[in-house]
Length: 586
Image (cartoon, rainbow, N blue to C red; front, side, top):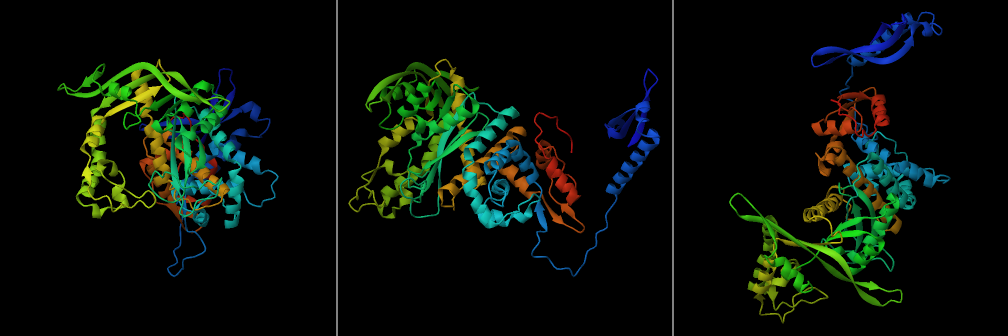
């Protein structure tokens, strides 16, 4: 650093602190701090030039001291201190940059203002969220791992469980705060919103009593233990908008409307177009959406005995399809559409139901790729069915799943799931297989958006993969289940921390251009750990292109191998999301 003097046209001398740097092999200069005109500075300093030259010398001396090596003494006989965490994680600074941007801390502190509790509920929430990403486990496990973090976690295990009750009451406000912050970031896209339902199991045998969340229902993982249903709403970029928990025995179609209403409240949005699978395609949802002025893009089933025969025949007929072929003339994709009506049942105030025709558009398409995938996925069920026909004595509940519909004469005890002895002459159902194969590769979509182009309808529906991936992230990477807490307030808070963790990962993915999966982000940040040396020095041993990108997004530099504790704390205090800022080379 040096003192730069420049003479202006009016003869006055202007002073500034400047430094040299190298770019593209050339030495360049930049201003560090503008000081002012010399004649003005003389009113404050006896000799401004001498004063600021001294400032430069002191700054340069401090910089040289920073670059000098530090001598660390190793004591060969020194024992490991069992009470002290000698290795800590610094990657959490990136996660906390997003957490802080969400504004959850303000919401939680406002909710607990005036409380006599000696612990910090936000500190508990922060720890549980970070641990859910870098090392998911129990609440007790998260508390036991608090020593490996550089941020403050000064609360007891009892405080952790007490805070779960407090945080439960903050659920709606935390979700709304996240929505407001994501909107301010300019990365929200609600042109279409996507909704789906999944469930999570508990390691308990008995369901809760009436009104409890843990109930036995249709588990998507085919488990017999009690489950809880979660409906998740997210935008076109995969960033969650809202969620809601329901008892495990709640049918999927009965979960959407509450979550959608919360979203419209947060955004002041008059109209939303909801994209969902056929589980949400029911009279209740369609009637409510139309009544509210909202729209829908739903999958329409063409399989099974309950399917509309006329619609199924139209989808499977070759008439009207526009085909796309490869260079050899082989058809790989085809699409067609038609306007029509969908009849739904609407409940009157007196409880009676009446039929109402809703104007819709049907879009049908066939894909060779989807046909191959459907047949590959079905093959395991076919193989099990043929083995069952050949050897009924080898029957197991696992074999029964997915294979029963292709076996004629199969009789199963509905209570125990066991094969009844009377079922002796089993036969493979070739007709059922042929009927299923005839539908392979075909999809039908029904939408209220009658003016939307066929391709746009199909692309909107295909966006459902993002919400399916979100469920996969929660179950695999965040290990949301099995759920080990039992009180309803604690269950709600468990899912709140998982939801916030999912939002953090999704925002990071969007801000880094989708280059990294959720698992990669979590793994890279978890690996950014350092070992304590002597004199508050820490030595870090993990860096990659991904960690550079993640730190750049958070506006911090964690490329140094050796850092003092004061520098590490400065990194955490400086971490702040860089929205729309140019990337800086690390």
